[in-house]
Length: 375
Ligand code: ATP
Image (cartoon, rainbow, N blue to C red; front, side, top):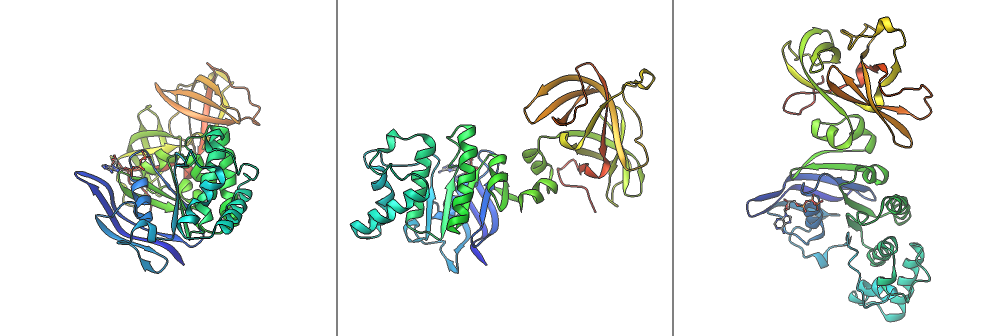
């Protein structure tokens, strides 16, 4: 069952098309992250769900009801903002109780409910504090308690963690996930941070230039990006362009910009001479030193026939990144990034000649217009 249904939703501000033709179903009890770069229309989409913004066209359903023309205060939604929006002159308890007062709840009941909510976000003991005395993470917990206190069907979170430092943000991601599981509400969470979306989301909706590009579970959008934009935005990948020199069934040979032919999956429509861009993900490549000096070629041509692919080059630099080591490898004047797990004990140093290998089926292939090539 869908809790939120957006049908062909668009919003323009003068000449700016902030959101264009977005259709999306958010399931009851789901945590859906809207993810995309700054200015792609995430917040405007969210604000149309909340009623803070009126669509230029399209329809918003919450539950069974068409709420497109309903004001925000009549919708069963509650919002958490990036800047917390707490009242500085009210105590923490009064902040959490505020929405309940607006809804006509009696004083003692309000206090009890607000205390309960503070306890559930681990902020009991802070009832009489001023929000100005709290850390960013604590303010965010209070803002969450305030939004949940009114028992909304839908909680809308607009970049709620982006004012927090990395460690606190990661802590709060886990807590938010726990709170979502505990409260069983429908959450729509806006973020431009891929890691945050991957940690939190049941499904991710990826937006670009006002449009919803792809919706899917985190592993689905990561493993199977719909186009080059999604691949570029989610991954941290190497794009290599080239021209198809030859087709061999489901595979073709791409003469690349680093002057080496690599084997790539192609579609039945792919013709020789076609220009393509492939994504070689750093984490899908294996790196090994070439020790035999007779093997030292600046690059190799035509990968072997067993479905694997590879090239050789020289390690330009090596960067330790904690859980992995990143090597920058020069291949015929072009750079490829390769990720080596820290548990891989192979010593690889700057200046080494190395071979990079990959499974040809891990390569994602895109047309010049960014669409994916596949059958
Ligand atoms: P960010 O992460 O930076 O907040 P976003 O993806 O949430 O970005 P929106 O805030 O929805 O994007 O903005 C989408 C586009 O609409 C942007 O070009 C923005 O400048 C424009 N925009 C948003 N609100 C208004 C407004 N009230 N008036 C005019 N333009 C607006």
